[in-house]
Figure 1 (cartoon, rainbow, N blue to C red):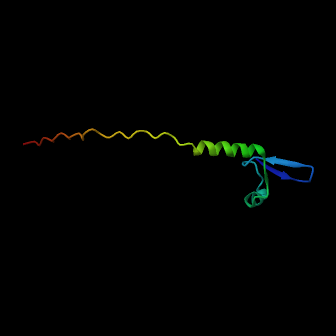
Figure 2: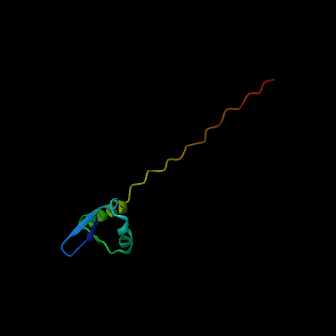
Figure 3: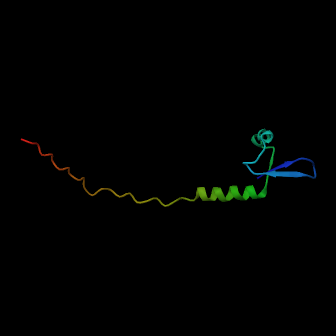
Length: 74
């Protein structure tokens, strides 16, 4: 997901879970390059989250059920 450029010719790639702690500040500042695969994953995730899901129809109880009266001992 993230590309860390060590030199102009060498880069290291890290996923979000394996990103070293010394790169966390750069990640938060937006200084790490995001890979194209990350952009694809983000786009597909946003598509899934933005599609509306059909809501289940609300079924109302036709009539409340009356409770049986308690019999008292005499």
